[in-house]
Image (cartoon, rainbow, N blue to C red; front, side, top):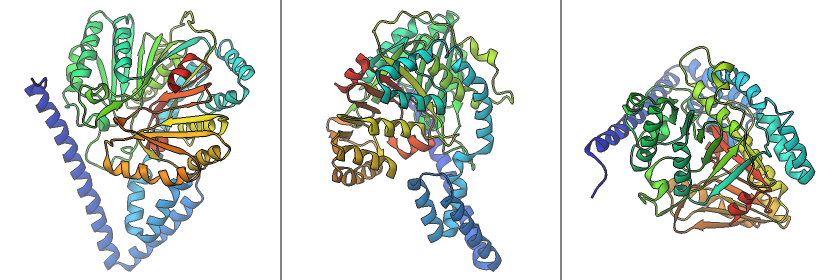
Length: 489
């Protein structure tokens, strides 16, 4: 018997209809602009000259920019070969991550959030860093890079638990939410209004009735085919605050290209969850559109949850309509002084968040640093493999040094075109000694790496250029603890 109600079918149908309508309107706008430019260039010599000059200046600007060469060269080639199309697409798509208005807004938000993140670091987290430096000097340099370039510190007073399946992580998440007494923060790229979400929603409703503050945040593009526009109304009727990141709508939205790909749950500032899975049926084996689904996650307990809280409020406040972005008083109540008794001796945990609103490619650089640091082995698992020359070089060089380098990709794709692009990288990697495996039961959506039995990462960051350059992402690096060996297993 189908569990999908008539209302549910209508909701999904409306969501898909809105997506199709928006895409068609955007395509029509693009075609219209190209027709205008083409017409003007055909009948006005001076406009054609101006277009050529703009194209030349744009190519020179790109050539001298700090953009990664793998991202820069395709634009340069396109603009030189087809100036009208190239300039038009670059102005609409290529500059999306450079939106000054949003950059300024994020800068103002982080002026408030970052000092809160680093409060008391001298007393607690400097000790963790010094201890890490003493135990693993090479790993301490990666940790220091994250701290210096994103302000997310390393913690030694927290625990991390690894979940080898999404359903295992989800059940632990629900149990933790049932114990919430103050607040629940919930941020996901995609939420599907169906069985998996309904279990969470029931808990949220009960908690809201008890007076627990619940905030839900999702990306509109990621969820557009899964939920209808009345989703927010239904949540708010049950006392749950909800916001949508960067709504997908017809029009030249210059911020459209940057999506919120983060997956974060925080309960009372004491327990946090992150990983690869969204809140949709396929992630938990309720449906199997692409064979078996492989996904993973982690639970963090202790003061390190503070970093997930700060990452949540960065995007939560970025899309707020008020001109006053955020105040210290708004956030401090979500950053309690955690009195936590550590369960596992030793170990270091460093959650972090990556943003396209700066020039620091944190996610990619952490991966490359771990590869460069590897001595015995370095294993990655990713749903998509579309990487830069720098990362290809790092993989190949490590393999040539004698490091056992392996990359696991899906055996059954969710997007056939992306799957073809992923496979196109196999030759370059294997030619340099990297071993590539496909997970044959189905689609592996987890984003992890593990190296030398001492360091691992788990989070939302794929090995593809959208994750590494255009999306808001988050991850967690953990060192010298049981979760590292669990990740390897």
